[in-house]
Amino acid sequence: DKYTRDEGFPQNLILTNASGAFGVIISEYILAGILNLYRRFTEYRDQQRNHEWKDVGTEECLYGKRILIMGTGNIGTETAKRLKAFDCYISGIRRKDILPEYFDEVHLVKELSEELEKADIVINCMPNNSESIGLMTRERFAVMKSNAIFVNVGRGLLLEEGAIEWALQ
Image (tube, rainbow, N blue to C red; front, side, top):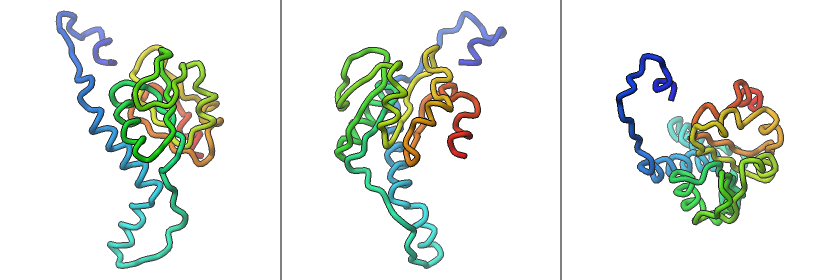
């Protein structure tokens, strides 16, 4: 986006994108990342390398978790589809009040803060547009559960500057 807004960018070019091409791939990355955190695979892998077998603490189950997916396009829908296999409750945030396949409910962007409070896992798949810039503020991170996972595969401009650092601290 920033390149096309640059004054020197040629105006006679036609740009395209690969919309819809990465839903399966990115949704698998999302699922792998969540399972890695919940099941502590990295810690067990490190122990295996060191020929150790110690208790690494409590693990979480993905089964039955409440998931909030911000953005219900190709990536969001493919992610919801895979999470349904874990019997997760899937809530979506989108611009239109239309329930996509694999979602249990959908909410408008103006309802985001209320939905963040309920979610065990929040997955951002939103595109970069005027409504998404700076959407995740400190205040919104503050209402999330203290043990919630935030996955961001959307655009970086969604995050208010310093908000994620604040939330992690």
